[in-house]
Length: 77
Image (cartoon, rainbow, N blue to C red; front, top):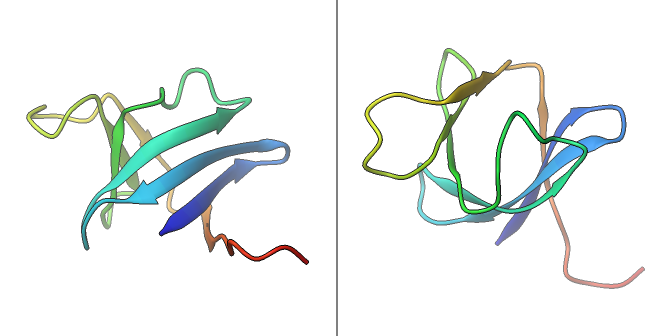
């Protein structure tokens, strides 16, 4: 299932759902510092935590909870 994490105006991260806790970054638009393709992201009370790998012990970046997660439809409108 594909999702879009809207970070700001004209800034978003495309995500693929891995399991009930983790998303993987599959695309980036104007978000160079926050995440890279292949990074893993999870939602916590602290915000959206970005990890380089699942084995990483601490996030490399934390996005605020104010970002918006949108489920993307595969259907054309």
